[in-house]
Image (cartoon, rainbow, N blue to C red; front, side):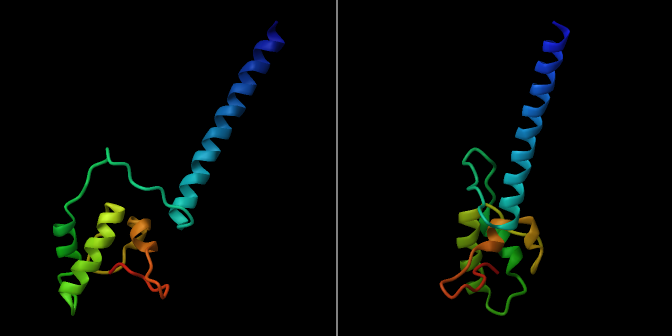
Length: 106
């Protein structure tokens, strides 16, 4: 009786560790850019106009920058902070490319 109780507890522990490992692997895949899950509509949405205004305020071509940023923001529902770089805060934004495989988002 005691042996089967320990076996059940051990198997439940192993199953929960497996699920934890799978969740971590999925997160790693989405961070590295292989497959980024689409943001769910229930999550908070940001004001892309304001976010892109801040992102593009120092650009040499602000209208072009805002248009590209707005397109990326609409797809990813995020914009990295600052005027340049910080792409690790929004992997989806960082991984969008043009047809020529150039980075699309400013």
